[in-house]
Image 1 (cartoon, rainbow, N blue to C red):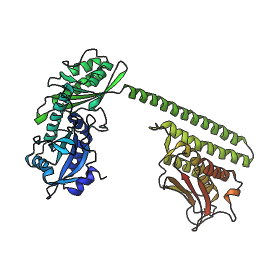
Image 2 (image 1 turned 90 degrees about the vertical axis):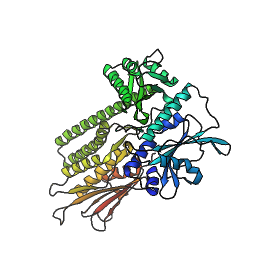
Image 3 (image 1 turned 120 degrees about the horizontal axis):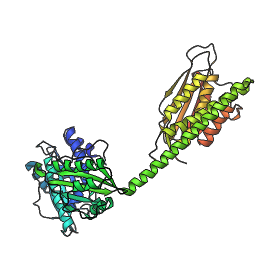
Image 4 (image 1 turned 180 degrees about the vertical axis):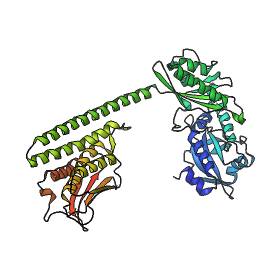
Length: 499
């Protein structure tokens, strides 16, 4: 299905700022749909054809939908869109039509012009289509919902709804069903839905909200006086016609999310709409996850420290060993332990947003490569570079993979080149992702593999580690071969799918 932007750009000549306004409206109009008990369809005129294209649709969560099938992408013309044409040409809300029938279902059509703030041009039309087959009894809740919906519809026509979005703010909560409070111009509560009343009871309010000043009550209930003043200021800002950012209210161990929207049809502030949602359990789980995440990061920090201690002890032991081969073996062990410590150090500094721990692997590879060059051949300098990005890898892949790369890089730096030689020694680590697999190549321009070399029968400890980890822990494949242009390359394929 094409996106709103794709459809508008393909069929109309609307300016980018007009399209952005339609995007913001489609991101915030669930409120209007729920208050109206109606589907909302966004129609844009197709130039010079007398037809309209539906580019967005939202169904109410408070009533049955008027359309079982998705309407986005549908083009309509003729008598079916006569009311849309009237709205576009006259620039007013249209409500005077008789009910229409879709099979056995009666529906009422209304239409709202869409403008940007301060502009007179109608850039789109919002159809408000209500399923009348299960019409709700006009009780207090329904009447307040419909009255508020009409105010917001006028604000859509005025260009003052939706309000500007605050940076980093989503439109997912709270919603109408979570809790609704309607304020008059003085800030007094004229209506509070049962869920809104319950949310304020969680904050400690024993009395009813109706007739009270919401700003004063909210400021008095919140635990922190400064936070209470901030919440009060936000309610007052909405009464003045501003749209403040959402605010979390905390009192008596409960947390309530509040969003205040101004009601100003025809540009006249008449009050505010305040949506509230009890998110106490959500925040409790968030705190548990944060505690768990902090504990896991602390464990990785301690593991890293312990590994560094082990590496330091091995390094001290290596200095006391008089046999060169034994000293070299201990120094290699130091590098292997240090490479594992790098993964735990990265995990200890990163807060994971998912259940699976993951690390940014590129920085680890670069540090391992720099260490390999530093302790490698001293008679000449080896240039080492990375081509491509590993990106984020799960810890269960990162730990064995860093050990494999450490061995391959160390092996290339120490054994691929011998002085004197022509050309600059170079080792390149190439990586790309393909079909949920990680393809890694470590290539050098050195002397190549010795004749008759076989990785499976090699007795060198480093290459045995490489083969074991690549085929066992990583469940992948690895091949060492001589390059046609000279030198050696190790080609490894690692599956990224979960085990």
